[in-house]
Image 1: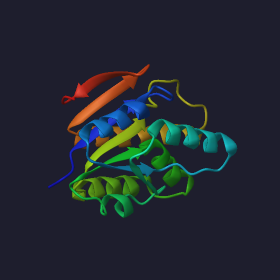
Image 2 (image 1 turned 135 degrees about the vertical axis):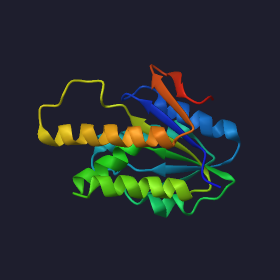
Image 3 (image 1 turned 180 degrees about the horizontal axis):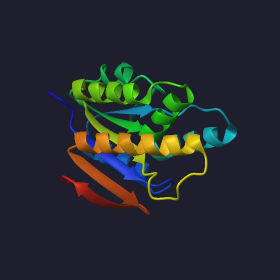
Image 4 (image 1 turned 45 degrees about the vertical axis):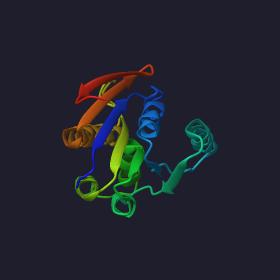
Length: 172
């Protein structure tokens, strides 16, 4: 049976991760946290530490910056997995020079095979100004395409702004 997918969108520091974590906790299923971030500097190390503290106990953490199948194929029907976040996952692929369309299709295929419920967090990057450089514009376009594909696959889509959820698709 394919996964039930909840897709959480929001701006930076909008409260989307805390909201997504609480959704997972409320299910009372075994919780897996799929960490996609890579720590390259002290600022990211501090952010990861804050997220760990916010999340608290009761999570199995899997650190996998790129390969969705390594995480999603190992999950079982009694689990719920929080992917935090699709934006970092996409960034990892972009900076590694990977084919972004292929990476996206691979992610969607892994989601289709996954037996656990999924909550996927992603940044909404299309609400700001047009970036002035080519790499940033390429990222913004790829993030928009990924968000559209994930929202189409999800049963529930929620926009979080200032810590407040707005259901765009489905129901909580």
